[in-house]
Image (tube, rainbow, N blue to C red; front, side):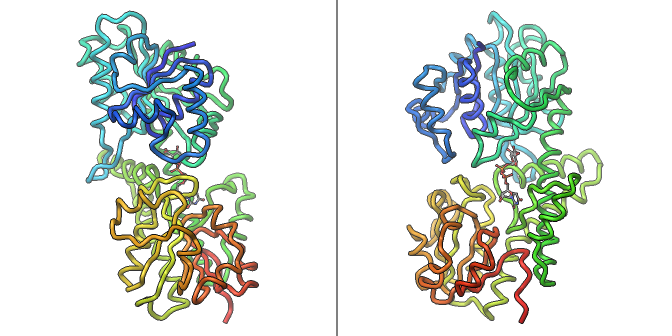
Length: 441
Ligand code: UGA
């Protein structure tokens, strides 16, 4: 049983804490936002993530996890300090390291005079070199000690996905531990004894690169799917048939080939941009990463292309925009493609009415004037067109006849291939989707 302080109570921090507490460890979640800590202590999450609230409540009830704003108190007896603080994008595309630095300084200040070894484990997404050249120096400076003198740093990137965060953290595809000293890596590995999947030991910079490379590959796969899908739509070929077939090639793989309106979220756009910028600072070419980002900026406009196949103008047309979250099962709207779609529709003069099962309030912080509907029916009633931006099951389960019954003209532009084209067409819906070859005239 280890004592673990987890800094940063976002998706990664809470999942990490809950998963370690489930394995019998004693976890203290540390966050600087007092309201968040109070809510967590009462079993409430500041974001929507399936299953996590229940798991947190069980861990709280078992006395295995607590939350605090007091870093010193959490660290007093700790064997591990996990850094799970955010590294958001700065204006220039580089990651903001303020939270990481200040957590490292705070930990450093408690190191002097403390007994026992503290392994500081960086889970936050950081560029190669950050553990060794940012976190370690902050710890050494604040403590006046040198690495190995009662503490060390390790990198342990996280690969969970929002929407299935807890399950991903419980059953990782692989665990990566980066450390300079074998003894430090061994300490971290004791926490992962019973975890499934391959376990990879590397140095810190390699671990940090693995995280960025994984996200760059996944984002590029989505980007390439989108680009080929756009072509498919224009030549009357269904990308989804193509994707299924090429996915049988193990070198390509069948996942992450879902064409749509582009990738959003707090990771792909930020991490790919950070890596591209990082490459340039090292005078390495970044053309492919740049192209992935540029393609992703264009991709939401595919919706307008599809609408233009049905309407000469969108002026004064009522458009229902279904789905504001960047993906289903989350209320996260960071980098959501709903925002560029919403703006583009408005620029064309459309009246946009938005719906989302969970993300309405968060989207309102991006667009305070947004017109919202509290039910799907309310959004669709009298609409000239509907654009699906997030493939919530709530939408998927809608009978196609509803669109015909509720809408003024049943035009559905599906940005996530939520529906079966044939069933929609049979019900009388004029159905268009990214990558779906246009019906022959
Ligand atoms: C992503 C990675 O999948 C995780 O492995 C990683 O840990 C995480 O970033 C991170 O770095 O923290 P996440 O952003 O939560 O996870 O969600 P994804 O399921 O990867 O989706 C990202 C975006 O890509 C979404 O907007 C989604 O709609 C889009 N996407 C995904 C597609 O358009 N097509 C696909 O085939 C898959």
